[in-house]
Amino acid sequence: MENTAPQLFKVTIDNIEVEVAPGTTILQAARQIGSHVAPPAMCYYTSLKGTGGKCRACLVKVTAGSAKDPRPMPKLVPSCITTVQDGMIVENTVNEQVLETRKGVVEFLLINHPLDCPICDQAGECHLQDFAFEHGRGTQRYEEERRTFEREDIGPYIQLHMNRCILCYRCVFTAEQLTNKRVHGVLNRGDHAEISTYISKAIDNDFSGNMIDVCPVGALTDKTFRFKQRVWFTKPVTAHRDCEHEKCSGKVTLWYKGEDVLRVTGRKNEWGEVTEFICNTCRFDKKKTSDWVIEGPAKVSHHSVISANHYEKKAIPEFGFKQAAQQYKQIDDLPVQLPEGEKKPVGIVVRPDSK
Amino acid sequence: MKLTNRAKQIDNSPMTVAERLYIPAIATGLGITIKHFFKKKATINYPEEQRPFSSIFRGLHVLKRDEQGRERCTACGLCAVACPAEAISMTAAERKPGEEKLYREEKYAAVYEINMLRCIFCGLCEEACPKAAIFLQPDKIAPAFVDREQVIFGKDRLVEKMDDRATTGIQKYTGVKS
Image (tube, rainbow over all chains, first blue to last red; front, top):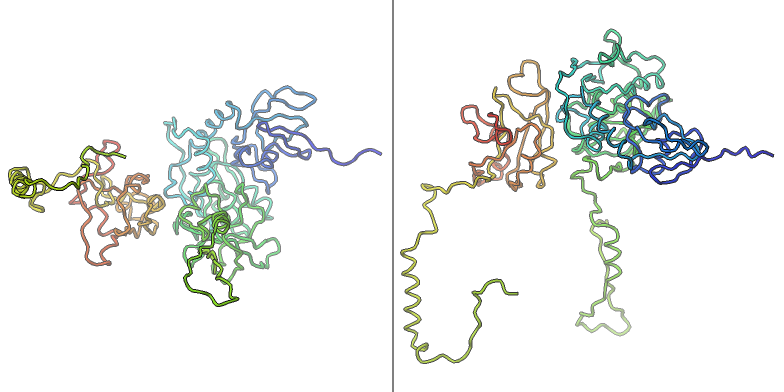
């Protein structure tokens, strides 16, 4: 009988071998290895079908197409929409050409992007900020006038800053796939392309708030959180509630400042992607601690500015306590004679975080 | 470890007759005292006389205005996150139509407070500021206070007055005035 079990493809990314199922993209294979080899992605979004291939942030070099045809691919390929072949060899961070190209990609994405990070509410959790910081040159050669738009109110909850948009189309796919009627999209072509609603229509769908989460930049921001607080002064806490909406997962991150919930967002994974979307009731109307079941502080990478000045209770690493307990020596400094048969008191290590 | 050559070996041997007279020792001591009468004084008559500031002195903070008198601060929070003493706090607000002459950007600091007891005058806020708004003045010392209520400096004491502008500002980095 023929073996019908799906064969795994062997792929080498940055000299690290990984076995993945056929049909996996290079980006997903790299993400399976870890964040140190995964290419950056600005437009690709795992939970939205059809995304990817637009921003060119994830370009990689394929030095061998497959085991059967080991010729290199002539040009850099977008890893988010290129599927792997058996025996494919991919170079991402080890390839000079890729790194150089990425600097160019950053420069292109920033051509019309305003330098208003000090004002923008997305600053601190902005993918474009991270991308430019990690892969950019730090300078710009563009001298022409940037295209500018007036900021637009699309519905009562969402603010559209078209200036900041990088045209990744994520919000369009979100509206297309999560809601049954999309009322916004990309108008015009080329340099004139812009995200907008047709004749200033308001977006009032139950799931429209997810556009804020999927937007990699600050083009779509939460109006209820507008200028309330910088992201890194708020404290993320994971929580959930039973939402009546059948499509809503009810799993969120609450952003606290003191006792107040300033903002509710979907939970983002380590790639900054929301996998379980939430409805607008959860996002905009439930801003009391009593509405939620708190699970605990959200995990924030210590590289992120959001973790700045947030001190965990366990400031001393665990091994410090273990070592202290191990090296503890009983000192016989009790001059008092103990009565016959009574044991000497036992020393204990008290942890400062113990209750 | 020997740091200087000034250390003297302690000698506990019995004193000679000349040493026991003490008079030469007293004369030597008085000689040192009289010598100091004719030396330059180490002190000055503060506050009538004041010492010049060092060129890199970091004194009282100022929140600068631009050449049109608009507040430069946009409440981005970078000074507060850079502050190692966590002395800075702020609340942002959105600029209303008609306030364009007051604030430079569409967001501004409605409340901006520095706790002067916490501040260590390290100047990291000045370095972090992307809008060239906060500067530590090289010619002003933070005033003394006698009450804890006076310690928290709000915008009323930090924002530069248009008729008494601070000597420091963006020219420190660019050479351009204001």
